[in-house]
Structure formats: structure tokens, C-alpha cells
Length: 173
Image (tube, rainbow, N blue to C red):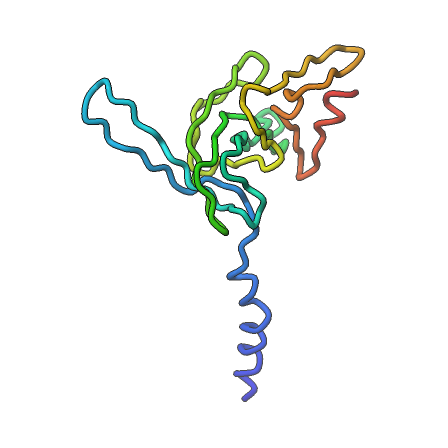
């Protein structure tokens, strides 16, 4: 009986955490048709760990971001990570916990850092706050030393160091 009690308590307290899955909005699978000719256009579908319960909407256009770790090799320490926009996807199907998106468009790399792989990869994240009804109405932001104009490029790159978001401090010193 003394051996069973600690095991029962461990199962009781740790089991909900083992099966709990928070919304992480990550891409966990990519499916693509095989082209039957050189001229045939094929589509890629991206399967996402988030659905209507997490607020994703069908026909919504969302940004795909990649977390890129920053490492200072000179001082041998981690500096956190950047969230960099990769592309946009359009949700074509939503379920309670799973969504399927299709490639919509790339971002210009003029004002966004260069990526090693400039296409959507497994593990990239959907930014749920970037919902856009129409991709044609995407505003752009211009950064000036005196002021920040209203637009959407400020969120293209986020500076996160040790889980602290320093984006506002980086753009507004």
C-alpha cells in the first residue's frame, strides 16, 4: 500500500499535463500533389496545430513566422530568438483543433532579415494576430527616426531575449 500511494498520486497530478496541449499554431505536416507534367501547377497544403477553438478562421490570410535563435559565438551565450516572417498562407479548411492552409504569397526581403531557407518549413508558426481579410489591403510601415507611421511591417521582426519581448524598445529607443 505504501508503494502504491506515491504512484497513484503521481499519475493523478501529472497525467493532465502529459495530455494537455496548448495552442502552438505550428505547422506539423506539408502535403503536395505530384505533378504529372512539367507545366502542371501543384498546390502545397500546410497542416496546423490550431483550429476554430484557437480562433483561426477559414478564408483568413495569416503570416507564417519562424523563430530564429540568436547566438553570440564571441561571448559564447544565447541572446534569445527573433520571430521573422516567412510568407503568408490562406486557411482553406478549419476544424475544431486542426486547420489546413495553402501558400498565399512571399514577403519582400528588403526590410526583413534574410532566412537560410526562404520557404515554409515544418515547425514554422502561424501568427494568429495577423489575420487579414484580403491580401490586397496589406498596409506597409515606414520607420523614421522621429516617428513610426501606421502600418504593418513593425511586426515583421520581433526581438525576444530570454523570453522577454524587446520589440518596442528596439524600434522606439
